[in-house]
Length: 169
Image 1 (cartoon, rainbow, N blue to C red):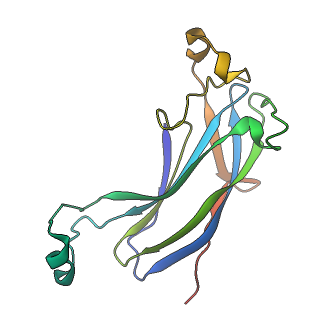
Image 2: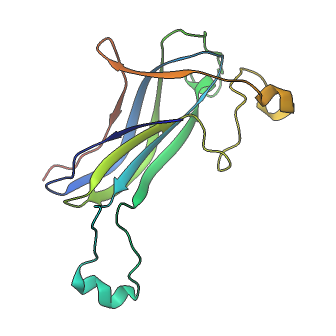
Image 3: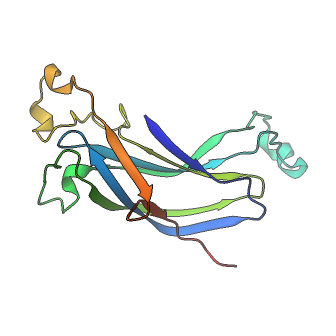
């Protein structure tokens, strides 16, 4: 499952440069979870390349509505207090999960949208997490068979946020 936040079409350019800070307030029904945050540039529905670009692209690939991932990073929740201190979650307890996505350098053009997606898996790019605080590398098939509820809070008193490094003009 994926939770998505998206702006209206941008009226001006928006340039991001630097690290992206993620501050999630979450509660899960088990003892471990992964958190994948993606920053995406959504092309306009009627996107066309500028005439000057068409001559050297040698392609008219349709990009209308295309979602270009600008930056994405998965974080295993058990390491929220440090990679040397893995900790289980307490089920249903609101818990902060903070981490930094690597630097970004990207300009969103007018008419494009900025999209943020949060999800709990990126398999097969990143190994599966059984969503339990157990040794992932010695799991059995049965360890991966369970349902999990992951809540991402975004209200007063428990606000999640993604802090973008906006370059001022």
